[in-house]
Image 1: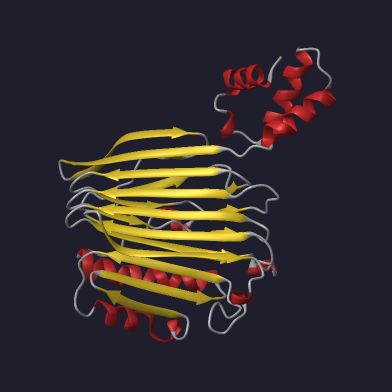
Image 2: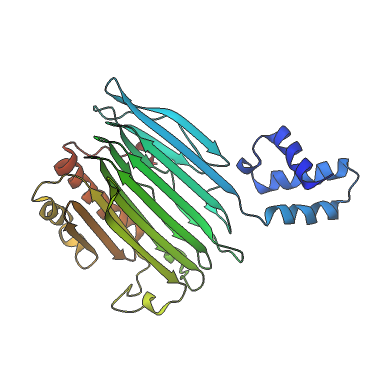
Length: 324
């Protein structure tokens, strides 16, 4: 029995193999090989070869504005990426959508590919139920790519919970945003280099991060960096200054002339020397560099609340999943 036929049988019994724990798939491999009169040792060897290849997961979402409500009209997924039914906690019909990745972590050579299309006038808040974890890997790079296209009059808020890059991980994270006309984008990335809570530094591995925002095909924001584990920049006073939590929030949309001042006032002393806010044309950028994830999330949430009020003209409505 070939690996292809074994995989097909597992799909027949279990469905999509990428949505199940490794222990279940291992048992299925061994069982099917036993049926084929193969030895358990041979089954284990072939299982290890199968698992040595990274998993590819895709999620494609399409939103449309209809009868004063944003509806999720299209969804397609491959592998362990999915969404629940949208929630509608806001009066303007904005859809709150949770991006689900049941395995909870990204291993070597795994690929996560997320595409979201918001039609004209659509409004959506995209978030995740928990942290995204990039695990240590001795193999190739793990990749997460997010593509967001927003039609004229649309608003996309991409607010995932934190990303934890384990020591030894090789991670590449990119976000590409395309806006049409007066479309609005608000998104953040909150990254932990290593796991400071358990005193794990980012001593090995690599992180590549890239964010680009276009309006009508013209770039209005671009940023990328590449960091090696134990890089001198990690401890340099001019760079990370031994602070492992790095976060950036980008807002491309209308804003009141005193929005920056309102953000600074909302943060008070809590953001001193750790938080900055600046504006380039119609793009507002907030940054955090510090040592506590809870502080980073709290500061960004305050800034988000101000931007919502002054830019979008509505109060903040935090996704319910954040309270769990």
